[in-house]
Length: 65
Image (cartoon, rainbow, N blue to C red; front, side, top):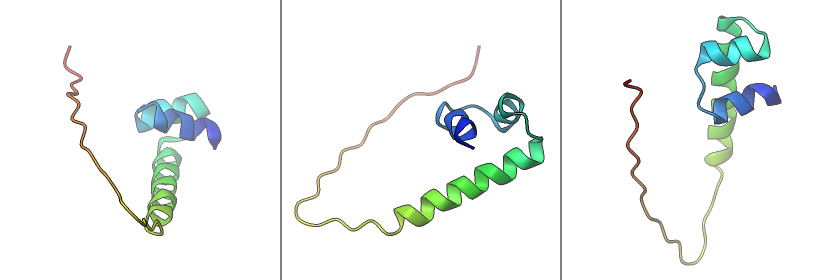
């Protein structure tokens, strides 16, 4: 599972992660959604106190060749 998370963090596609880890494409889809749901539930419980500052970062991204 950690290898799969590394693939996700690297921004690889479902198909690429499935091939690298050695699982089927449907399993890759299920794993990705389970991991994202777990991260979302963790994120919902974050509370900030005191002064909180935030800034935005915009990045251009294109896969055109």
